[in-house]
Image 1 (tube, rainbow over the protein chains, first blue to last red):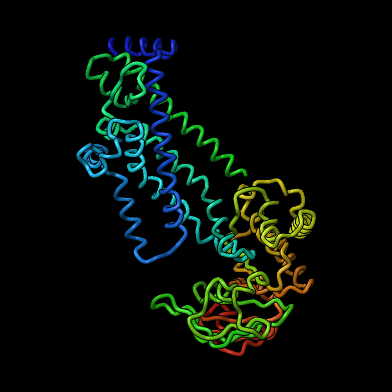
Image 2: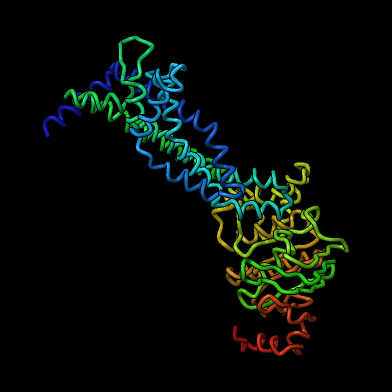
Length: 237
Length: 234
């Protein structure tokens, strides 16, 4: 108990004094996972919305596949991506292993099923009634689809938030693809919050681990809170 | 104005409509009555061009009805569906789609809301209104576009007496303006109060179409007589 209390006290001190190492790791985490979310959104959102909007042969199989991928273990995905991106792998020439971009790409792959499945469900849930309503009011199919997407906006936003939170909180890909590299003032660092927490805990530096844990939780809560406020605004608009 | 010739529709092995023949005249209030599951909603959805019949022909103003007629026919659903946003944005939706000027939209929204006794509700969040108020917004949204045909599926089924009375008054007002109203209901009192003619649908088939008083006073078929007297088993 003493260890926990003193750990929390020291952690708060580190946060309040804006310890440069901790801030550097926290900012990198947000940057890497934010970019991963942005990247995944580019391909996942159109796929998810299309699955929700249109009926096509094999739709249930595609949905089932993305739903199944929701639970993929991050270490397994990390291993697969490592084999792909390692210098001897088929994409080794891209030089993405042990880079921030490499982690972002890995996390983007990880969160793709989250965005696709959640976005598809949000659209599908209201698709029929909103489309029919719009059609009876004189909308053509394009206008009706726009109306459906607008109504599903808060669900889609939730999908993006869930995806970001999953990315920022995962460890497997960050440690396998990133390697937890940290050299002060270097541009090649790949240490993020989860890899740092894991490392400091095993090294017995509990204060640093707790400080980073508090920051990670704060980021997740802050993003969720922000999304909540945005959702309310969207509903009101 | 509207004619259906031998229209049939099935969902899998379930026959929802079978050889339906109907004629609905311009400006009348036409009630479709029948028990739950008789095929009223399917019939309305075909009339509203939301579904296509499996067989048979649907004529609108003498021509085969197609999607180009969608802007002349609108439908109010049994359970009102609201877009997110204000009452104003809901009622204005169909007008914006038709690219009316802002001034014209404001005028029409105001008129439509006045007709359903919801003046001053423009800025309210539509999804936070009561069921009765939402149904009235749905009706205002439909009549704002000044449709030639207004189709209503059980418009007062979930409403209290006050809201139901307001809705019935609105139906009468818009009918007087020349709009053809097609109304599905299992409320026989309502169809007797409001409609000019009644079609009785039973298990996907139209068993009788008569003038309202004739239908209730002297039904042509035994099924209709039993239905009116509450003796029909189904």
